[in-house]
Structure formats: C-alpha cells, structure tokens
Amino acid sequence: MDFQPVRSYLLGLQDRIIAALEAADGQPFLTDAWTRPDGERLQGDGRTRLIEQGGLFERGGCNFSHVRGAAMPPSATAHRPELAGAPFEAMGVSLVLHPRNPHVPTVHMNVRMFAALPAGRDPVVWFGGGMDLTPYYGVEADAVHFHRTCRDALAPFEPAAGAELHPRFKRWCDDYFFLKHRAEPRGIGGIFFDDFCLPAEEGGFERSFALLRAVGDAFVPAYLPIVERRRDTPYGERERDFQAYRRGRYVEFNLVFDRGTLFGLQSGGRTESILMSMPPLVTWRYDWQPEAGTPEARLYTDFLRPRAWADEGT
Image (spheres, one colour):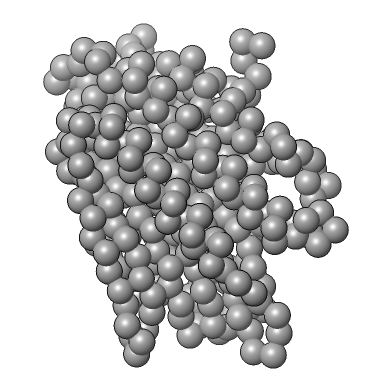
C-alpha cells in the first residue's frame, strides 16, 4: 500500500497552517527538521515548527512526523491486542497553541495515520485525529463557531459506518478530553476519532483519507476567526493568573491520558517535539475554587460541561 499521498498531504497541511499562524502572529516559527537513522529503536523523520514569545502566541508548535518501528508500543495496541508486537508505520501533524492573551483560547489539533504491518498479512490501517478548544474566558459565539465548523467538515461524509459521524465524534471528544481524576472536562471539546477506517463498501482507505483531509483543512477556519475577535481584548494580572491555573489542567491531561504523548514516549520518540504541547507558564494551587458570580466561575458553570454547541442559536 502506498502511503506517499498521506505524507504529501500532511506536509502540505503543516505548511499551510504555519503560513496562516505566522501571518496572525507577525513573527516566524522556527523550523527544526530531524531524522532518526536505521539502527535506532524508532526510524523516520519529521519537522518541528515552533514559536516562543511571539506577538500573539506565548508558545505554540505544529509538528509533522513519520516514523517506523519494529514493534507497536502498548498505547497503540490497547484496543487492538491482536496486533501486539507487529511492525508499524505512523505519520501525522499535531499542533498545540498557547496564546498570551487569556481571552484567546488554547487549541489542539491532530490528524494521523497508523499502519500495523503484521508478517504475512495485509497492512491494517486506521486514521485518527480531531480538534478541541480550551477557553479560559468562554464566549458562546466562539464555541458555536468552532463546533459548527467541525460539524460542517464532516457533513459530506454523513452517514458513515452505520451512524451519524458528528454526534459520535463530538461525544468521543467530550469523553476523551476529560480529566477523570478531577471529574471535569479539559475544555469545550470539538471532534475526536481514532482507530477509524471505513469498510471497503463505503470507500475504505480512500474515503477515510478524504475525511482526514476534511478535518485537517477545517482547522484554520475553525480557530483563526476566534483569534481575531479576541486578541485585542484587555486583560490584567487576574486573568493571566487564572489562565496559568487552568493551564495546569492541560499539563495533567497530556502527561496522564493523552494517547499521542504516551505513544511518542513509549516508542522512543523525540522528547523535545513530543512535549512542545506544554505551556510555558503554569500554576497549581491547593483546593482553589472560583468565587461565585465571577467570570472565572462562569467557565465552570456554563462551559465545562457537554453542550450541543453546533445547534445553539439555530
């Protein structure tokens, strides 16, 4: 099976996203291209694109990686134990952006392809990814816009695999980006899917790849209009302090639950690139609770709960 079209798309997607982000920030992202030669635990190559202390983004990265390994790590076989020990190939684009202004949400997006290569059998291929929004000071119009853009990206593929995709992927996102030890969502969700490939009678690899492209292409129109609306909102020390506190939840999720982070670390991936998702400034406090009636409390009461955002206001 030829995976070159997937690689070409992902590299092009990274280029297009970085061009849009550089135009918004006003400062360039650095480029760190890397290779892992044969003989190492993990082989392959990638391209890390990173900004720190930009005009808009305090820290952000958009990474491409394409790796091959001799045996799938535990995080990749949790739902497919029959593939344990099989060689694999994986590629994807992953980004996390931490804006400086607390009124601009943090955002995550990832699109990826994974192929297990068991001896004497055809490759077992699946796709995954999605995007989710993590506001600090929520705005309903922003949440509606983000979720509707996600829904519209999936609309040409509805229904698929016997079900409506958007409700399924939205619920999957709400369930996945949930801090079980805190019993609270990380943010307001979006869409998320994993281990996904349509059956041959519904288009198989090609249509599944088309869905992946639709999700990747939707990121810029989903996020940048929100950035432009909120980037000049005034803020002070109070808002920055709350932003740093809530960023702690982001760190907890990525280090404890995130499958991409665990896969990268367990498979011997490039630590600097894997941990580019970490925010630059974070605060933890013991048993802190927001004061009732404050904008900080409203994040918890109005936003950190599942809502049918795409249907609101219609």
